[in-house]
Image 1 (cartoon, rainbow, N blue to C red):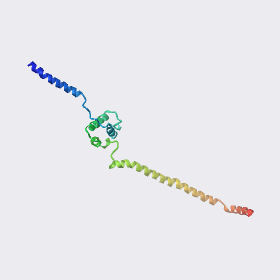
Image 2 (image 1 turned 90 degrees about the horizontal axis):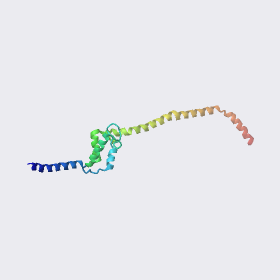
Image 3 (image 1 turned 60 degrees about the vertical axis):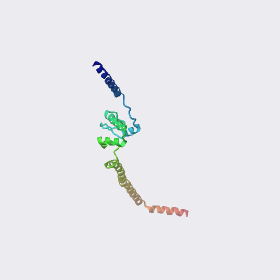
Image 4 (image 1 turned 45 degrees about the vertical axis):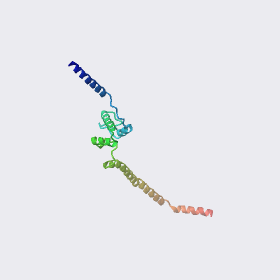
Length: 166
């Protein structure tokens, strides 16, 4: 009976040892495209509140999100699928650049349109206040200069000078 237990224990111990050794050896990892991984990490924002791009952030949340990216790339998912996964969990705020659709287009275009319209408005106001006022002052000065000059005195001098040389 003792012989039977020892003969059963030996293969069991051997199997358990083999399983322990195999569990401690890392499984051959699927090589992921590092460029695609970096591109995805550059397109995502860390969600711990720091507001940094995932590739630049070094906290635990960023590490966790990077691990998810690597795991999903190893499973063969595409960039769009991975980005969609994060958008499903965190919403559009996880994207470094929001998609160009709907309100997002308005949010991106409005500052530039406002800047251009503001510049045109400033030009028109300056034109009205400064440039027009300067022209009006110059016209008034010209009229005053014309009124102040007595041409009859100069006409007499001119006639006398012309008579000398003719």
